[in-house]
Image 1 (tube, rainbow, N blue to C red):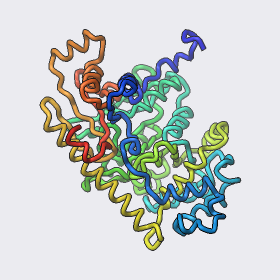
Image 2 (image 1 turned 120 degrees about the horizontal axis):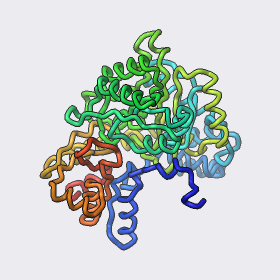
Image 3 (image 1 turned 90 degrees about the vertical axis):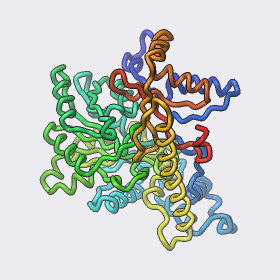
Image 4 (image 1 turned 90 degrees about the horizontal axis):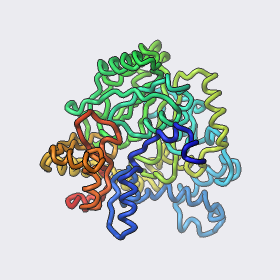
Length: 452
C-alpha cells in the first residue's frame, strides 16, 4: 500500500464535502473553537430531533426481549409494538441476521406500494434493491455502467460530488452539463445536446445521464415539462437516466411540487414508457427523517433487461446483506403511521413541524445572503442547501492565488477562521470559470439563523 503503487483511480477521487475545509474545521474544533458544520446535510448533528415512532419501533426490534416484558405497553404505544413484532417476523432471525442481498422482501413490497401510491402506477418489488444509503446504490449502478475511460456520464454542474468521485473511482469520464444560474438553475436540452456532441468529439461514449431533483447543491425543482424533455432526450440518445430523488420530501414552494421521473415516464404513453431505462434513488437520510447515520436507501429499476438485473444482483450478493436496522427505517418511512393509528397525531405533528421550520429557514437563508454586499442567491426551492454566488474583488482573487488556493476555497477558509462556520467551496461542486460560490445547509436551528 505504498502511495506510489496505489490504484490511480483512487488518487483521482475528490470529495469536497469532507475535504480541506472540513479537516481544517475539525482541527479548529479540537483547539476549542466553536464550529457550526454546515458543510453536509446532516440534520440531527445540527439539532433536529429524531421522529419518535420509528425510533420506538427500531428500539423494540433491537431489544426484542422488551416485547416479553409485561410492562412494555406502559413505555411503548401499541402500534409501535405491533410494527416491531411484524418486522421481526419477516427477518431471518432478528436484526443481527443477514437478509436477502436485495433487502427483506416484505420491506421491498412496502417500498413498491409507496411508489405506486406516489406515482399512480404499479411497482415491482423484485426490481427494488435496499441499500446502505442512496450513495451505495448510486455507486453500484455507476459501477455497472462504466467499462472504462471511454464511457461518459452526463452530470449536472454544479453537482453533488458523489458523482464526480464515483466516476473517477470507476475509471469513467464525467461529461458536464451546466445549469443556468440566471434562470434559477434551469436545465436547457440544447446545452445537453452540445455536451454530448463535445464528448463524442473526444471519443467518449455517453452512456447515462444524472438528474438531481430537487437539486443539490442548487435547490431547484424540475418541472414536469422539463422532465418530459429529459426523458425524450435520453431515449433519442440511448442513455440510462439516473434519478437522484433523495430530497423529494424537501420542497419549500408550491409552484413546482416534486414529481418523480418515473411518474412522468409512465404518463407518456405505452410506447415511450417502455423505451427509457431508468434507475431511481431514495433514502431515509433526508426529508423530515434526517436519519443520515442509519444508512438506509433503495433504488428502483425500470425497463432494465432481466440479464442486467441478474448481474446487478450478483454484485449486490458479494456484500451479502444491506444494513438490516436501516431496512426497517426504510419500511417505516414508506409506510408511516396512518390516520386513526395511536401514534399518528404525534408523528404528523413532528413531521409537519420539521418541514415548516425548513421552509422558514430556506427563506431566512436566502434573504440573509441577498442582504449581503457582493452576494446573490437563488431561492432554495427544495433540498437542504443554499448556493450563493460570491462576487470576489480582484485583490481577493490575487491574494488567493498568492496563497496557492482556488479563490472560493480561500474565501471559505477565511470565513471558517473568522466565524467558525464550515461551508463547502463551490469549486467542489463545479461552476463556470471565473464565478465563485459556496454551499451551506439550511439546517442550523432557526434561532441561530440571524447570527449566521
